[in-house]
Length: 154
Image (cartoon, rainbow, N blue to C red):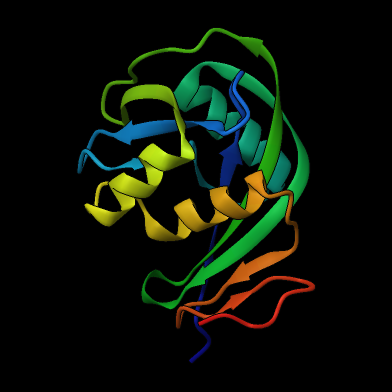
């Protein structure tokens, strides 16, 4: 039987300081992650990213570059991560039922949260690669990391 995969999109939105990015605290499990969500039937990835980011943060963004992708076989998802420019809007603090808080944090804080299970590990890796200027990264379901120009990592 053919397996149906869903598509997800996530925004990497830099802060004023070089190593900061916008992250959202989820309503359902209190974990922090990047703003984003599912691509609806017939919707482009770019349009889904703009819609999801606005719904969750109040910001209007423009996807500038595809940083990378990851696959998650457990939930049959392929996720796309985009580096985004902030165009307009006012950052909202809370979206009932979805987001408890939106904040800009440095990578060091995100790394610490990841160690404590408070941040999605694959997203933390993607943020790290994005801040290093790497593009074309793929994180596989089995933990394999493919970064162009770098020896394969496990």
